[in-house]
Image (cartoon, rainbow, N blue to C red):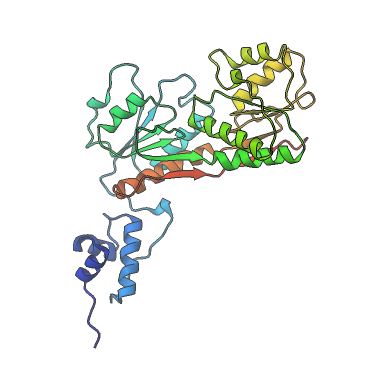
Length: 334
């Protein structure tokens, strides 16, 4: 007669406590959905006999929320145009806020301090995690790290800070766009965007450059268009008052495309006749771009919350970088 499989045997098999296994098998809270799935699947394979095993799901919206998750900190950079009113960052914050409200988790919103650190005033027992939105300074991130709570960075990367990150798949989007342009025969390009401003801009620049290299198209990039201190509109207007226009300007985002178009309008050039313009983020829907990339900004914020909940329940798992697909959308008149 086959011996009955015990909870202790299952606990030994998954290298977890008997208490955790018992709660998972009974469907009680206190373990993550991934852990519950591992325990239930192991129990089934071992022939564990019980009236019923709890159902398991991979849907992160149905993750078990431990009652200790009460408040999540959301941190914005102390940078103009990177706040809740921004046409790009604002919707990301809305996604974070909506998801936390759905999960009945409190939200504490802060702007990074200009001088002295305020994180020493925060009670780490009252805050279970921090979602960083945008280009927060290295020193602020290091100060926040001292609180020793999980951190998720949205559309930002800092090589000295190890944590989970959420990004748009810049590589696939720009590769798709460049393939279309190159197949149409365009061979004179310039990239526009301050590539030191954001890691995503740098990724878009690298992908743009690699696409031209692979197609063996020479690209004599004007450095002033990717490293500039003055307002972009003034830079573009000065440069192309005497330089020849490329066929295509590939811009790191729609805002750069907007200023580029303004400058060239003032010089008498006509968009989609004298040159083409592409963007990214889909923040200027009325701009007559050849193409842009539709970033689902609220969804980006929601996924940051989902990753935070998962991280809180899986503190010792390797850090992850999540990439969200974004669709290239073309002007129907092209």
